[in-house]
Length: 157
Image 1 (cartoon, rainbow, N blue to C red):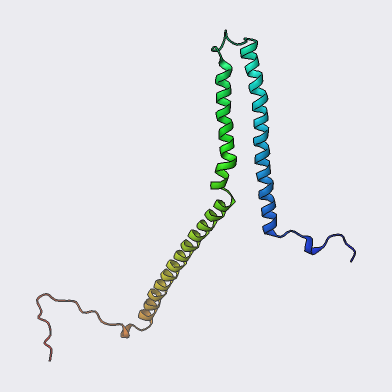
Image 2: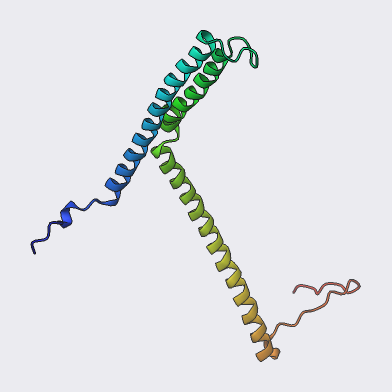
């Protein structure tokens, strides 16, 4: 009677799905931002170690930090592409379209299988009915005449 929960306040399935999708997108963007910040700090540290402190020249190439930063930029661009571009092409709408397409394919396949099963059952029933009819009434079964190639066909009157 005096409960704080109201049935009207409950979230329906569509709203829940939209909420979950929004949380997923926020998490993706947050991960991208985190990657970008780590990239900035890491690349600055690598450039300082290489160009200012001149460390790593004996083991690695000269200006090795530039190559590492370029590789990291490439990986960051792939992350940006996945979050912003691929999500539009293969986002929620694309998933729903693929789901509907697969459902339709399954429904048509199930309909084909049901039709095939009904045909097989019908053929089996007809065969078994003929067999039981032939066993119960052997006198009513049509007599099969063998064709004699030497015999002339009967004349029509």
